[in-house]
Image 1 (cartoon, one colour):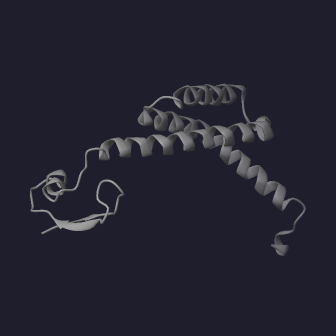
Image 2: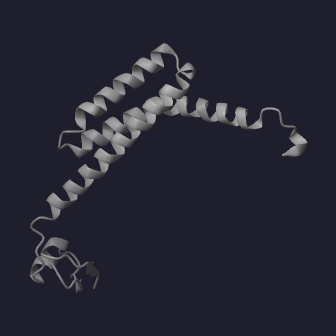
Image 3: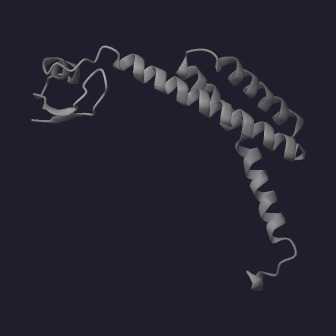
Length: 137
């Protein structure tokens, strides 16, 4: 029979454990039959995803703004406008509780900055190699 490992949790299952689940039985049913409370599991998963996406979204906004401040000359006016729109959309969603929408907005900002990030990397490599001979590398 398949086994389910349950990690210790202060209020839900302090000792943790391992239970067997009959084929065809849902994990929820197997846990409940073994007196493991899963009442708040979905809310916990949602809260964790929300926190992770909010942090990642804010990190992406901060990094993008920093890159724009340093290397805005590498952006066309239309790229700059699109990136600003994507930042605004993500900022609007960060205070909400819709972790999926936050992730989608962060992904959209990532896609909007891909070419810019590539040009920044190319510039960094050029600066690092400026004045060097190939034989010295």
